[in-house]
Image 1 (cartoon, helix red, strand yellow):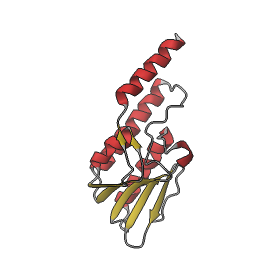
Image 2: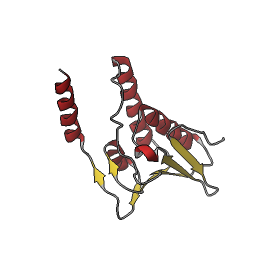
Image 3: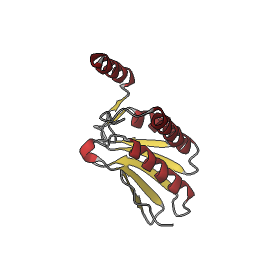
Length: 151
């Protein structure tokens, strides 16, 4: 089975059976866009189903593992929001049900969903300068303030 080419994630399959799944939006600090979630899910499913893959390693390209949810997005309609929620749930389920060793290799700061999903890995390694942040409450306050200004 050939390695898929994805828009926001790069998969490298090494001869020893290690599949590196790397967030690949370094200019956007590996922010998680709707496409990133789809690519992440596709990569996990591919690695789970490919016999040549023995171990999967999640990492990021550039300075950050991931900066979390991309904030500069147009306001989606209700159907699009449901699709996004469904994809996010599917990523979490794919990580929980992943049939092989899943390693988080944190190459720099990890923010938001990227941080919380590390708990779903079997092992997590981090460089000394890695930080882990879950700014969900701060983010919600920021979004509410922004929406209140628009009213």
